[in-house]
Amino acid sequence: MQIQDLPYPDPGVPDVRSGPRFLWWLGRNQLGGQLTSLAWGLLHFMAVSAQPFCVGFAIEAVIDRSGARLALAGGLMALFGAATALGDTFLHRTAVTNWITAAARVQQLLARKASQLGSALSRRVAAGEVVAVSTGDVEKIGWFVEGVSRFSAAALTVVFVCVGLVVYQPALGIVVALGLPVVAFAALPLLPRATRRADVQREKAGRATELASDTVAGLRVLRGIGGEELFLDRYRRASQEVRQAAVSSARMWSLISAIQVLLPGLLLIAVVFYGVHLAREGRISVGELVTVYSSVMVLMYPLRHFEEIAMAYSFSRPSAKRAARVLALERATDAAGSRAADLPSGDLYDPATGLLAPAARLTAVVCGDPDAAGRLAERLGGHPSEDGPSVLLGGVPLDELPLESARTAVLVQDKDPVLLSGSLRDLLDVPASGEVGATEALAAAQCADVLDALVQGSLDAGSPMDAHITERGRSLSGGQRQRLALARSLFTDPEVLVLDEPTSAVDSHTEARIAEGLREIRTGRTTILFTSSPLLLDRADRVVLVHEDVAVAVGVHRELLHNEPRYRAVVTRETEEETARGGALKELHALGDAERLGDNERLGDNERQEIEESA
Image 1: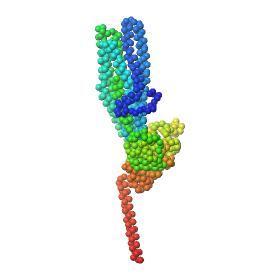
Image 2 (image 1 turned 90 degrees about the vertical axis):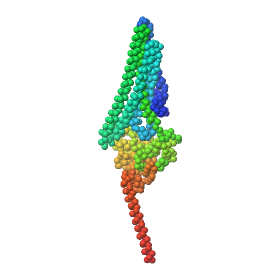
Image 3 (image 1 turned 180 degrees about the vertical axis):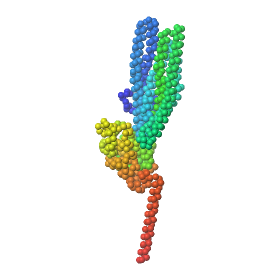
Image 4 (image 1 turned 180 degrees about the horizontal axis):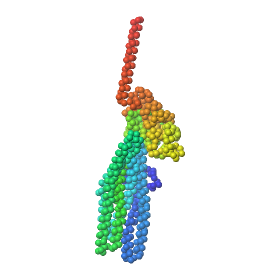
């Protein structure tokens, strides 16, 4: 796989049983790239390590006054120099390719999982963790995957050079062969502690990121209640904890780096001291001493990759663990489905609650619990967060349809819709039926003032459709963001549209106009509206009260308001005391009516008795 071939047609099915297994799966799935990088790495490191032998050969040629051997040594040095440059160039190229392709695979897997889970993802995983996995963790995972091939090449080079030194000069070669493993693995006992400190740092950084994200998202509310300083102090404390953890982690890694410098230096001193002793005794030549010394010096370069791979694994293992935990999340139903990808139509029925939304009608649903309303809205869209009976559309279970078909048939807009940055044209670049135009959808959602605000904020916009929307629409008010999201849903024009509190941040006058526009533009389509707004409820064809996950009352708004105390309590925000008082008054009125009826009946009996006696 080359960079130009990205994205992957199919990123595959990852092994998410653990972080190391996930890393191993990533490595196996780009085995060709790993082997290519290993080959170029061997060429580079072996060419670098061969230079000392050429230098020793040249010194021996000078001592022996052999011009031919000196010329041969020069030619070999030029050849190995060219091989070093060539190997380094393509090693870097293939290593970066491995890093980018591994990161891209992880990002595709995360994007696919987020698409499958939908809004259930944020309920099961903290937002800060999702952000950390999709940004920093992806980079660390890619770093380790691309570092494996370079480390393998470096390790093989060290082994080859040690064997070569033992054969070339056994006395010094054995010293080098015994000392290099100590140098390479001396830092291993410190790695677990360094890893734990790095884990603490990442955990604190994730919490700080989540706190910052929540603070920015609720900045308007914080300003309104004067809570900016409180949250700022919390973030300061979290930031200082991250700094302290980072310093603690850096101290351990600096100790490991110091050991990686100290021990090779000691080995080099030992080789030189022993080599000079052997040279004075005449057991080795000056050229051989220079060769061994130069080889030990050069080996410090591949040995650095031992420290790098240890650091890469230490940082990537918890990152891979977090990624595997997110990728291991599953939908309550199979995304592939068991039916053909047909689009059913008809009434929408939920067997779990008994909720029925007739086709081509506007049905309003009232729930006292906002969380229960959100879960019910997800289930109506075919995205249940837990096992249970499937919702039926025209008698067809949505769970048995492929996920794409279910989402095409039923579109769910949750209570906190997200606006991505880009132009308004990009916002409306969604799959749509083509029967509803962008202008109609924007007009029905009462977006005229929103368009004016966007044009004013985008001086280079030739038309409102080219106006720029900032990230998550932060430059707009909550009501303006809601209306743009509603316009996007109306433009899509699905067979069934489920809206969860689409006007909770809109004033009453605008809400009334939205209700009329919604009825008009959705004529002939099924619309389900989760709301407790009397303005929207009064314009619904059918209102259903869902209490404790059961549809307990059906009717129109005014009828339910008069006859159903539980409905009235939700819509009018009555307290329990007020509801009880209203029920008592109703009973008193009913009792008074019964007493008056009894008096009238007794009066009628007396009149009949008088008539009979006079007769």
